[in-house]
Image 1 (tube, one colour):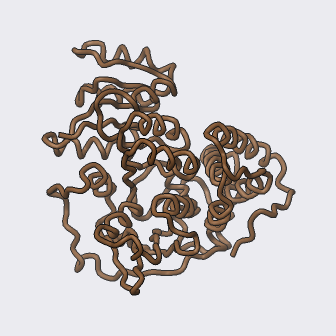
Image 2 (image 1 turned 180 degrees about the vertical axis):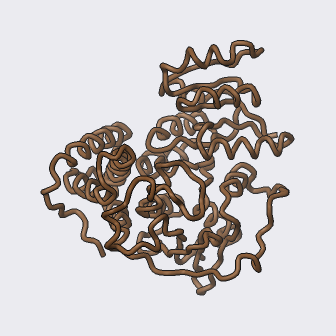
Length: 396
């Protein structure tokens, strides 16, 4: 039985991971849980899965959590704040830590888990995007496994099983196209928050759903694929696949193309990350190609999705630039969700901030954290003056 710690247990990734644990109690057990601020759900999870340790990152919710589970015996170790989440990540005999925390907040706990010798089921793409220059050397130093738990990189990882090291030629990341794939570009200035949250295929949190609408999620996945699989940015392509049945593809040196298919269900990549190299039987709905019908593909429109160009440019710049891109995007999306900026302002804010950043080619962890904080502050400043013309990105 594999011992698991789950970071971000009340979010979309977290709840689906716990669904898997519930379905396979003979395969997995929970050692630690960490959540944000949803006390009611977190308390219910603690009751059901009885972790040895639990942390709520919102420190002012700790007393409420203590009251909600005061009748449980034995009591788990209860912690709060960022330090509490870091402690959960490295605690005890867990073999794998699932990183389901949204955004750059997952970076420090992930590093803590790696340094404690735990394998990582990586559902938080920002960990590699912002911290790649620091995280990858730590993975090698501590001899742990870094297994992708998001659908696209899991698909690539699955396709690569049995492929010789020199056999990979290209990676093709599929994208649904998000909420606005069928909108004309001219209509985008009218976008409201509710429009951006209507994903056609996937059920996800608000931030990632907006990232899907802008296609920044796919741009970030390009950077993550670069770090995970060592591919040059010129050899990582994005293709719009509206049905979200093919989760990504690889092209081999002999022009063969391998793909991983399945219904849009995050449980499958999560299960594979937890069970690899095994395949565990499930009674989930089988993929019926006849029911799927036609599978279609199209080239992404760079005018509709300028965030793609921003991500490619930041990835090629390397160093601290991807961390700045990621932080600027997180802050801009937060402002959009609060209806403080418009939809098209997201890409503009990111571009302005990347243009202002003095890139560090070999950043330390502290450099990355400083760049992250700086970028968030710069986004807020950028919203006060949109007359500056950025020069960092030229959209292809």
